[in-house]
Image (cartoon, rainbow, N blue to C red; front, side):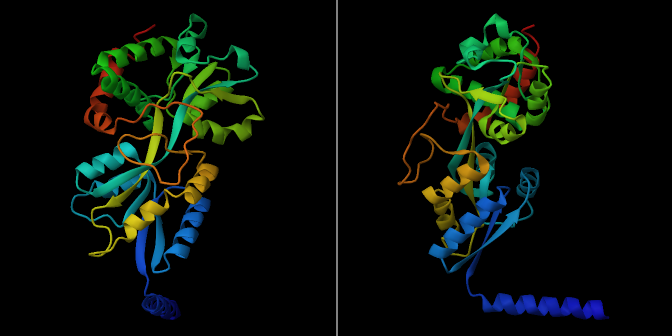
Length: 323
């Protein structure tokens, strides 16, 4: 009885608090770190006191499962930190009405300084293809890792957009396969193979290499290939059912997380960078471009249209064929 009374009292208190808050509620789905969420909430509500931000923290897998249910409306208004490809798929399915790129991280070539000196490390892909690195490279498995799949897809999409021919991309991946001795299941296991000395070089997203560096006591280093690299891109998306009629709260929040203040916090807490030049979206007006690398502009349409077919072809015609 006492437990039931406490539950009724708590429910009544919550109802009273809710009735006393006349602000418009905006639910933001994300898996970005809590310190970054706190910055975004504090700065947004300071400039938009009529809006109450509520974060719904879920994994990517949980969000995709929710969006994949055609009989249920998403329980959030904004998807902050969505992979670009998944946001585009949701857009095509009518679950999202718009998305904008916000952050990216390039793939890099990482190595252990105890095994490979900086002067000896490959400065570009052509150097990586030298016979000295034969069976000395690891890449996250494109069959089990979204990172590996994104790398393969981005390489082929870039070549298709540039030359309208996927063969060039698969030929390049075939040259890379000759150098790869193992495809670990994810980035963590790829870096573990490097740490155990099973490989000399790994290809992995820069943000995840940076996140691992503190545990390496200064031995983990990387280079960004000079001729250009594929990049992972995350976006902010607005769901098709966001807000009340006439409300633009979701759009205002999406604009806010592209502001310099939030992008700076994102770089600090995620090690991802604000997006570079983008031919399918736009940058904040106050963003100043200062890029230390050249990334392949993400061909989202091509990746979504043909990504699964390309991965199947890679597994059939490229994986292990270069040995």
